[in-house]
Image (tube, rainbow, N blue to C red; front, side, top):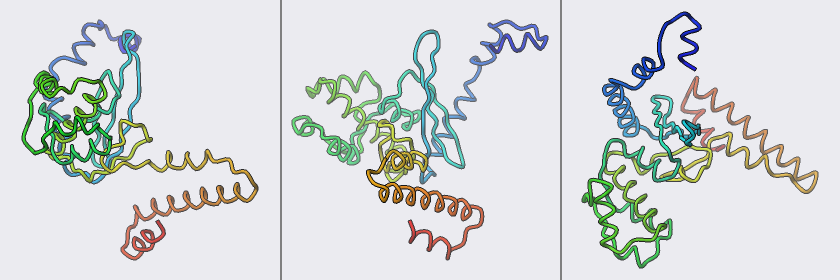
Length: 242
């Protein structure tokens, strides 16, 4: 499509030339993009995140966005799993770490005790590549799909935190399971959708649902106004109302 548009404008260019412009000699761009993500995550108290799908040459692909008011990072991959999301948060690092945050994650995800007892938790790097990590799990006898999945996610989370990701980072999303890590929260629109799905069995219940929805969006508009002109007294009042 890009070639067609350029040719319609009278530009004599081939698809090969367009391809080279888009993908070749982009090392400095990728380095800058990775640095933006690293610094953004190290300084952020919250991030918005989402992904969208597209097909390329008959294969499904996904683009994941991470950012807030100060930065934005886009990453393309062939997966939208939690493991893929944690790999993005890990940045350019390639190591696997099972620290105390990893332990908490595995306990929350209910990894079977028989596997949990095999693991040691510290800030020490266990492996520096996917192949080494696979060999580590095999040596421990962790071979089932679900156990490998959970322990790998925990090790990626541990690595990301060791490289500067805050364990208190607020992740705002649409509620997709892959984003439900750290301090997870629904964005306003998706939180409101859950309320809007309530039908109400009586007239009073329907009126109460409408009242809550109206109150929520009125409060949201107040927050937007506060963002433009913040003051301490108004902040304390809004904290109390929240």
